[in-house]
Amino acid sequence: MIPEVDLIFKIAGVGIVILLLNILFKQAGKDEYAYILTLVGVVLVFIVAIQMIQRFFQEVRAVFGF
Amino acid sequence: MKMIGAFLVIAASTMAGWVYSTLLKKRLHLLNALVQCFQWLETEVGYGSVPLGEAFMRISARLPKEVHVLLSSFAAELNGTAGLTADEAWQKILTQNREGLALKAEDWALLTDFGWTLGTTDREHQVSAIRQTIARLRHQATEAEEECEKNERLYRYLGIAAGTLVVLLFY
Image 1: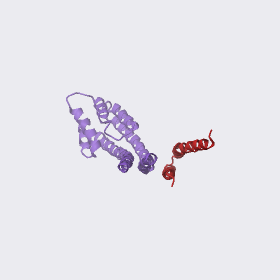
Image 2 (image 1 turned 120 degrees about the vertical axis):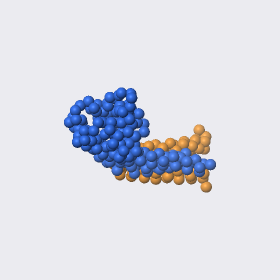
Image 3 (image 1 turned 60 degrees about the vertical axis):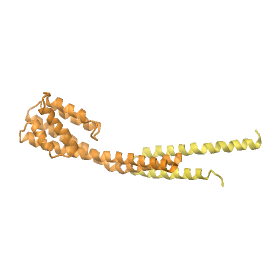
Image 4 (image 1 turned 180 degrees about the horizontal axis):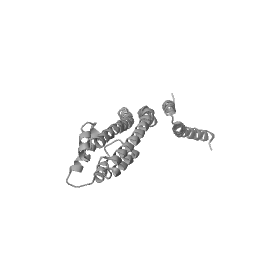
């Protein structure tokens, strides 16, 4: 199969950890930290995902010969 | 090799979280011990009329280790040959022990304030200063307890989760 499957697991793992931390912060009454943490999680995952998307666009350009 | 690195990272961050959460608890214990110490001091000064050096020596024997060090070194300084006043000796001891004790800046400020009244007034004023310090310490202790209850578990889990996150991202 495609070798990028572990990337999906990575993102899923990050999601789970962020979710747990989010619950933890909410319980401790630090809602603002929970919010910032979610934002950080989104950015982290985007950094990983954007590289993939960039590669995808390059492939598309290569296929159509631009 | 990768596994060992990942394990090390998780272990280190778990430890960091754990250490931080114990620091909170230590501060609470210290503050409670200090309250106790000042209560005894009030008795020694107010009813016993014992000289400061002797009073501190007597009290320090009954206290847990960290506070014991603080007080007994103060008493030694007072009885020493350097000829410091009580205030000077107190400030000197505080700056010496600043690194070793898990207290926050507010707590140190409180103790420094106490030093300014030490040995400069008569007995009644001394007792009232001690009482005031006790009240402020109590306030600080209840605050520390709240913080401890709220954040102890948070820091512990935060350490584990942060380590896991780093490992996940760089694996």
